[in-house]
Image (cartoon, rainbow, N blue to C red; front, side, top):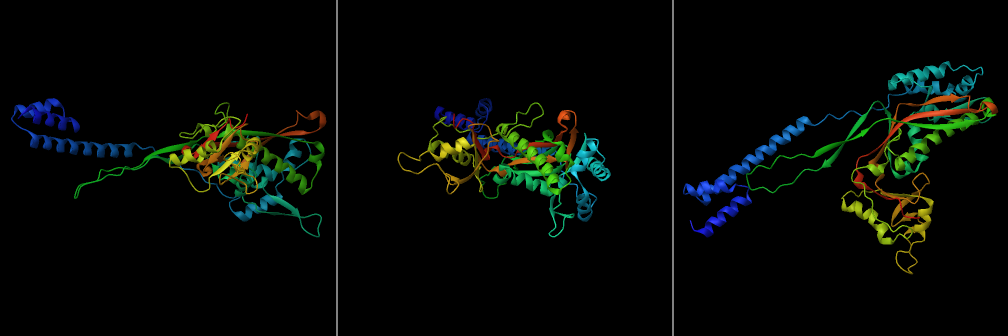
Length: 415
């Protein structure tokens, strides 16, 4: 074999990962291209078999996904019993009893005990069911002493979370009634496609799965009420107290989604999600092109989806509403009349960090809510001089992101 053909033989062997020593052995035995090709085919078959075995092993080692607990069901076992219980349930009775006033809370204590059993954890104070916090009372027309409650299902608490927060309006998902730590599957890598010859086998492949884990973090809120309000027995006073507790919980959760530190009992903010986009913006003077990079970066990750929306501070809203798309066009990045920013709807809140702008498919964000009620403690000492009380509400929650690439943010849009 002439040197030129030998060089080609060594080059072909190197291309398919055949060691030079094996080629030398072939040449020493007087063999050539045909024997090398047979060696290449054998090596490829070995690689395919090794890949198949590796996939089988990975599948066998894949951790089981912990089930996501669903709502344990209505208080008392069925919707009719729950409705009867919640018609008699009173948050104000609990406050009066805890303040030393004469008040029968036998019903409320039974409900608290049932909810504690459902979540597998004793109450720190008394558990007030979500359904009771969301109950709507109104006086029947023509009467003065009867009130009617509607929509008593515990799921209404989640409806309140959605309607009273920009999270729900933007499409964040809420999971309620959770028990223990949870793990939700997500796909981290897709299946590989192959071209094959006729009658050849396709290499076995399957998607790579990861997990989004959730661990309860205790969210606390403080609500101060006066002695005179405690003495009231009207439905409006009861509703005022309930609304205040729920509002404080919602605001605390919402702030954690965008700014949770992950320390000191706080959940981690969505900014820690793997793959989340952080496009550059000129602080104080954002440009049209820079704002376009928010959806642009998401599209580059192949993570765009219908329903993408903006969330921003009032200061950022004002800046973008005054930012020209181009010089002297009188066309602005944000249109307050049509309520869209470069074609996408927006929401304004001060529960996000100052100067920040957020965009994406918010359905990829999930807020887990553990249990069926808020743990209420009543502090009668702090405001004892004025006769008031401080209500301490505790709710276990966590923030989870299934696809960080579906989101984009910048915390220095304004200065």
